[in-house]
Image (cartoon, rainbow, N blue to C red; front, top):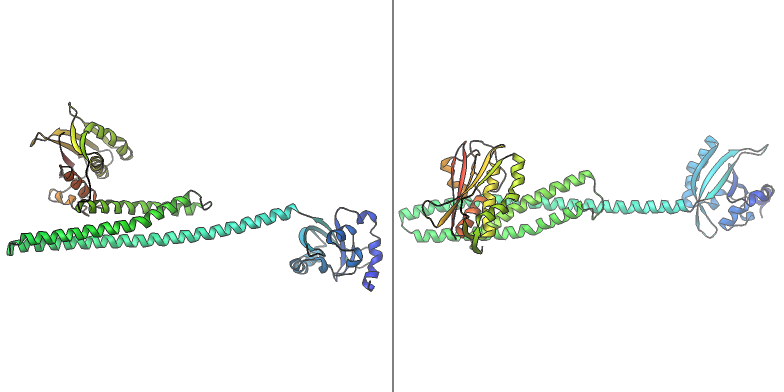
Length: 438
């Protein structure tokens, strides 16, 4: 034992048996950091004999991080205020085990002795466990947030890419419409000047097939990533990847709404392409119109209620049965009713009538009449052209792709019927669906 150890041994011995057997650690060190007293309880916990630590520097039983904390925070705090309470420290045992303790320290002088810092050390186990669990949970949360941000950024990039592709598709559709118009003009000129109607029809058919094939291919290519975006958005909203904030919920709602809008546009384009290329099959059967109207009512009622529209169905005395494809008939009538709701101001009226055709008793006419803004007479036929939206007396733009009526007319003709319209600006419109009577 060196001189420092021998000088501190009497002080250590004077602690008394009551302090050596206390259920907590005790250590006292002077302003140079030299241990002047330490009890047996702390020595046993750290695996030392009292003689091994008495006279040594306090840093010997501190971990590297705690040494830095002791030098920069703990000792200056005690020296300034004279005490420090419930300070968490990590001690280093003789076998390098880390022991967590809560420290209460006071700096004072006993009699003529120099100032010394006396510490009571209480070992803590549960707190270490909880702190480690909290740190691990925080690390997991940070990692999850990073993944969530990365997925959101990826989905945002995909959405921007899809929006760009959709814009390009619309531009190409406009360009193809312009090409079709030019082709029509050239066809008329050829028929008038050269009388080559057959060649013109061949060119027009080829152009239409090319357009339809292009639209079909582009629609299929866009549906796959759109469905993926919808799926990921639903997983995030369902909390599969962890809780989301209100701002993230708002962003996911916007992504889902944009996805549904783009998917609806693409479905319309794909349906039109299938019709024009003759790839759509019809399952024609005898269908009571009363059954169809009963099926349509629940589908259209929320839209009618939202705008407070009156809805009347005028049925003939004798039930009417028509020959049609059930699903496609529902699609046509639902589209006509949805358009009537869209273009009819709040408080207006929509009426559906069924009657026999005045021209042919073998045909049945289903009329869908509204009190909306109406369409100029010279533009009525144009509304059945693809990608055409006619503005009425109001210049307000309406939501849609301009494909619904074009698809509905083609479906009506595919079932052996016809779809026409009559309208007057400011008084409303009436659509006439002609179908064969069963």
